[in-house]
Image (tube, rainbow, N blue to C red; front, side, top):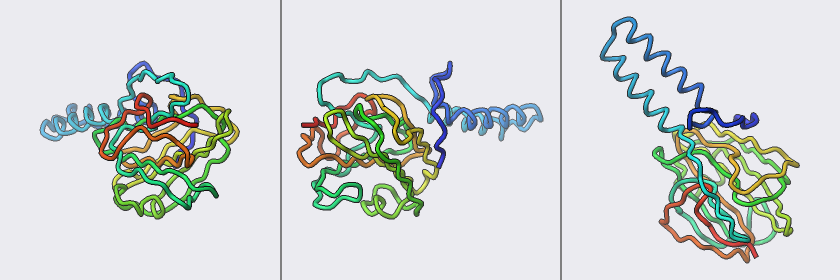
Length: 220
């Protein structure tokens, strides 16, 4: 897992962790054209364009509604359920899972203002992230955030079958602001939210979300 600090935005609208991949593919493409290997060069150029597109990092307008908690990821809601037991809290909670495919923006954003209480990294497997058991068995990184209103929630980045690199820049004790970029999962995966049991959910199964702009629901 990469836990370096998320740097300032680049001139180009791409996520900073992706710059090295973009530079590498550009370098390879340039070398292939230089040596006259045209077929491989054009294929490499297509790969370069895809990598640039994959690491896109668009600005989002963050909803300012009081108590609104926003989506940490682009993707599709695949789980909305109440749980009597939760890995990250002793109390019952509501779980909302968002599956990101390779075509989604993969930059993750902070769902709500608060202070990072814990950062919990778990090594694990790389099974399909759409499976519910991926929440338990896959490599994952959780940050537990406590709000000014004394509510706590967890947001968990889960690696998947293809996604094998979690980037998390949130540190314990750090104050986070709703909508801020804090990491990404490279090449598709999933985000789980563990929310207070009295959380007012505003999304449903199958709904598409956008990180930083879709309201998942409201804290009490």
